[in-house]
Length: 107
Length: 116
Image (cartoon, rainbow over all chains, first blue to last red; front, top):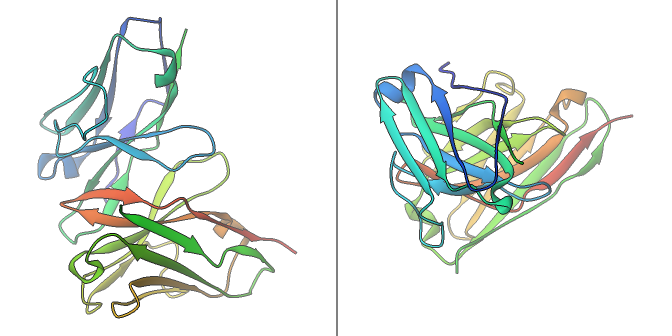
């Protein structure tokens, strides 16, 4: 089965920029999605189809991809961005795979 | 408004069974592939199973293969997950998700606790 790899944790000063990366073979063929999860809540998509942002998601969230690596960038991080972030993609069977998650701490 | 409402979770003994349900509304249920994703306490998201829009194709994670069955009733707009031979490591919040162009839309989840 395919796997996606994320750094376990990152920290960012309030108002600064942080980039979270996700690596995996499936990303060579399928776009990454990014989900934000706050404690006790269900995940919410913040970036889908590599670079698309759902309505209601602030434009400080952006996505990019190259080869087997996808990235989520938060430009001007806010206190409310402190959360766990998971990358995800589908595979050729239509199944899904998740990264292990990155805990973002806003200092 | 799209809603995915899971139910059926609870406390079950090791070796026991449980059937989770997910009531879908606000969209044409029969048009979408659906998945179950779980999250053990303090851990990450793990894909469990998926079913295509008409129920003719299913797939399972290795960790649950042979113990879990996903199904759907398009007339009732409901997704199911029958879980048998439950183990302590199956303890998790189970999320019902809708597959929209390879992106997942999530319910609020239902907690399954396997313990004696």
